[in-house]
Figure (tube, rainbow, N blue to C red):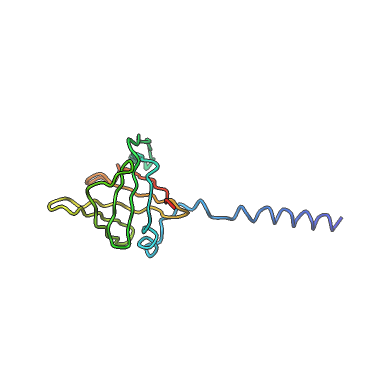
Length: 147
């Protein structure tokens, strides 16, 4: 009887171990990792319009992607965009400070575009772009790393 209880306890313990895996971690990517993990080719897979109401509740509306978009972040500090397989004419210099990604277009008098890097892990990148002056409305972009 003692052996049966011991064996049953070992089986339960072994089955419980996979439940401790932390693959679904939604914590932001550590700042030190952003600049190295972002250097890759990323395909945009989803766009969401996000609104945070007064109580803090988040409302997400999935956007419709009109064309395929790839963003390549090179080691040279530039981001290159490909739309529907064709290289876009503009390129952006990118800078990372903390968890903020700044895209600067190579055209004079163009405003900088600032994205918050929410997560880069397991081949997925999440970027948030806040509306001008707003902390309650933003666009969330989801990318998968192209291998």
